[in-house]
Each structure stands twice: as C-alpha cells, then as structure tokens.
Amino acid sequence: MRVFILSFLIAATGCSSFLPDPALEALPDPSQPEDAALMLQSTPDPLEPLNRFSFAVDEVLFDYAMEPASRGYRKVLPYRARTGIRNFGHNLAYPVRLTSNLLQGEWANAGTETKRFLINTTEGVLGFGDPATKKYDIYLADEDLGQTFGSWGWQPSVYLHLPVLGASSGRDLIGEAGDVFLDPATYAYGLNAGIRFNNKTDQAESTRQLLASEFDPYALNKLYFSRKRAIEVRNTQPAMTGEDTAQTQTLMTVFNRPHDPEFDDRAVEITVQPQGFRKPLPASVWQQNKEAPVAYVIPGLGGHRLGSRALALAELAFLEGYHVVCFSNNLNWEFIQAAPADYLPGYLDDDLLYLRQAHAAMAKILSDQTHGTPAVMGFSMGGWYTLNLAATSAPDTYSAALAINPPLDLTTGLTALDRLYRAPAAADDLETVKNSALVKLLVSQNSTPDNPAGLPFSDQEASYLIGLSYRMTLTQTIMSSLKIRPNARAYQRVNALCWEDYYSKIVAPALSERNIDGDALAQASNLRTREAGLTAAANLKLVLTSNDFLLTDEDLAWFRERFPDERTVYSETGGHMGQLWRPEVREAMRAAIRFQAITVSAE
Image (cartoon, rainbow, N blue to C red; front, side, top):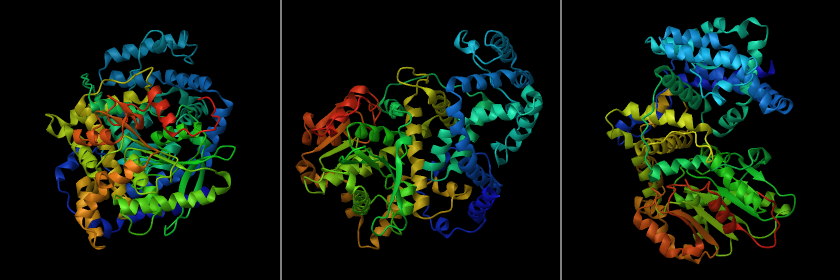
C-alpha cells in the first residue's frame, strides 16, 4: 500500500502535462527549424500522462523491491549460473522464434533457429550452454510476433508503458500476448516469471544508472524502445563502410570507464548547501581511509557525476591517493535544479561563482579528513572550467590542475557540435544514415578495446551520434533551466533549438537585463582573454589531441605555444577524448596529478 501511495503522489506531476505551460509558450523560434527532422522520433504517445504514471509506479517498485532483490540474487547466484538460466530461457522459447520467422517467410532463419535448438538442447545440456554460438558460430535469429506484425505493415500508433512489463506499444502488446502462448515456459508454474526475473537482475545496474542520472528517464526509455523495435522490425542492415577520422576516433571514448566495475558503488553521496542555492546539491565522494588532499572532478558538457567518463577520471585521482569529489556539470539538470533561481548556465562568471561555492561547501564538510592543497581536473567543458578556475585563482590555489581536451573558445566548440549534428542532412537518405549509425551503436555496446565487437563507423554516422548526444544534453539544459514540464509537445519544441539559439536567444537576453552585453558573453567564453592567468598557473597541465574537433588549427597552436611538452599530454590521434582509454595516456594523467610522499595502491 505504501508503494502505491508513493506512486500516486509521484504521478500527480505527470497529469499536469494536460495543462498549458507558460515557459514552453515563451520559447524563441528556432533559427534552423529543419534541425527538428534530425532528431530521433519515438512511437506516438497519446496516453503520455497515464504512461508516465505507470513509469512512476515502476520507479518505486524498482527502488523498494526489484533493486534490493536483484542485489541479493546476484550475490547468491554467480554470473555463470545466471547466464545459464538466461540461455535456458532463450532455448526454451524456440517455438516463438520459429513461428515468427515462418510467418515472415524467413525460411533460412527458421532453419538456423532449429539448428541452434538441437545443438543447444543436446551439447548445451537442455540449453543451459550456448555451443551453437560459441562453438559453431550459429547466431540467434531473434524474432517475435510483434516484429511479425510490423513486417506485415502494422505501424505502432500508441506507446504503452505497463507496470512491471515495461515499454511496449499496442502492436507489441498483442504480439507479446501471442508469444506467451507459444512459450513452453508459460505452462510450468512460475518458470516464465523466474526466467524474466533472472534476466532483469543483470539489467538492474543500468536501470539504476538511468533513473539516477537522467533528467527524464521516461522519455529516454521510450526513445530507446521505439528505435530498437523499429530496427528489429525492419531487420536494418548497417552500411559496412568505415573511416578513420577525428569523429570515428572520438567514439573510442566509450572505452574510457573505470577499471573497477564497482567503483561507482564505492562512492558516498554527500549533499551540500552552497550559499544562495535553492536546494541541496548532491556530490559523489570517494574517501581514503586516512587524511588526504581533495581532488575535484568536473564532468564534460552537461555530464552527470555518475557518467562513465567522470567515474574513470575520479578513479585515477582516487588511485593517486586523493579524496575525490564530483559534482554534476553546471549544464546538467541536477546542478541547475539546485542552483540559485533563474540560473542559466553557460555564462562563465556565474558558472565559476557557483562552482567555487559548491567546492567551498564540500571543503568545509571534509575539513577534518583533509590536508594539503586541493587539485582540480575536468574533461571537455569540465576541462574548460578547470582552465578558467586556474586562470582566475591565486597561483597556489591548486596543487595540480588537469584540463583534458578542453575547447579554447566555448562558442567555437559548441558551433562544432551543431555542425556535427547536421552532418547527415546532406545525405541522400537521412533515415538510412541514422538507422545505420544506431544499429552499429547497439552492436558496439559490449565491445572492449581487446575485443572490438563493433562495426566500422563512417565519418557521417560518427558525427551524427556525437552531435545527437550533445543536442539531447542541450534539450535537458533548456528544459531544466526554464522549468519546462517534460512531455512530447515540449520535446518537439525544444529539440529544434541549437546551441546558437540557446546563447543568442535565451542566455543573452537574460544577461542584457543585468547590463551584460553580447561582447562580454563572447569574451567570457574565450580563454585568450585570460592568457596571463593561465601561463601563471604553474601546476596547470593539459591533455590535447592534434585532431580534436572542438579546436581549430589556430586554437591548437595557441595552446601548444603556451604549454610546452612538459606541461602537455599530447596525442596525434583520438579526436575528442577518444584516446583516454589507452594505458599510456591514463598513466600520463596520473603522473600529471601525482603529489609527493604518498603510497598508492596497485591499479
């Protein structure tokens, strides 16, 4: 009863999407409305308030039931056993895949599934093993009745989110009902539910990450389901062309994650109440078991403190013996919702003021456990903030400052992101480029540097994925800054705005009311205006690549002239942060922040 009372309270805000939203009506018109066609589209959602209520129920159920049960289940049952149960469930559902392939006329796939079933049932001992894949390279031809209906031309017109069952559509819900009757596990009491629970336990960590770090996890979950199902129904085949460019190299940044897969769980969430903030601001904190200096980690543009790249950098600092503190980036919804009223991130003077207040509040809390001078480090826009903090502080403020792949001029960098997002606009078939990029992204999810399971990306595909990521960040920045209620109509309006629109049509007018003109905003964005402070910061070091698309050739030359080799970790390739996973780069970054008289644990 407590769970459902909480769910109804949470869902009450979802029903407000029926009401007019003055903040949404006050949005400026986009300078390039054609950008809206580039955004990924979800299944139509006419029942959105009801679906959001169902999603809220699932959030509460996850927090109070699913996550604790999953945690206990994973401790009792090792990964190998859980994999065996998942394989068994897949094998047992052979009639679902066989029927679906036959109904679609996929005769070869039906034969493949039959081979897999026979091999895995015999050699795989009732399907608990998967020799068909591992030994014979016979891969799953995964089809279901929902995909069958889609192949017959039934386009989903209503998105549905059902408690416990999760994301679906009218078409797929009917298909799943048919799948249940075809699945033999249905006829053994509790077996189907047990297999589903086993499979979901290994998704609990990613679900927790989604709920904790996303501005609107409902919308992202809907988008993921919609695009994945569209790809599955069409059996989309990616273009097999690959290119070696700054953009394709940048995608290697997915390998930049903590070496310890449980590193995020070792953090303690501590909230601070900086001066003037509307509400407490949470931070992830990793503490040493002895007194140590503090290292502040600043994520990239709109990044959350639990993002994989922020965690990877925090791990390096922790291994060097620091207490590590990570707040979400100023443009992230979490920071914005806690910051002073009417805060519009992106104007440097305000951003640095609130960053310093957050750091000071945390330093006060940790004062009994710290000694020495703090360090600061950040990547991408977080690296830009790091440079600005070092340039506008006394030279001895930080024992070390490390800026990783920062832009020199923020405006130049954001313009580059808009340009990447629009890369597929010139393609003969826009949807083909988008779908090919998404298929490759899905295939690449389980890749590692030693086992690159992904497919080669074209420059156009990589550019679009990078630009898309940051345009989605812009959407959450605008909606959280202007207090726009998230719903389908709001996303349709906000998704058409670009970074130039945000600065020229939202930030600049607000600053003009404070007698801050456009020239002051532009100067604040350009590090060239703080050259004296940068060169005076003796403990400041940079990580740069020669082909970072956030830097023009002139920008790169400017950095190289003012920061000689001994103050720079320099790579010829990698694009924007695509080199950070390399062991030699990781070690060089650790050396750049290392302090004396400390014993560090082996990595």
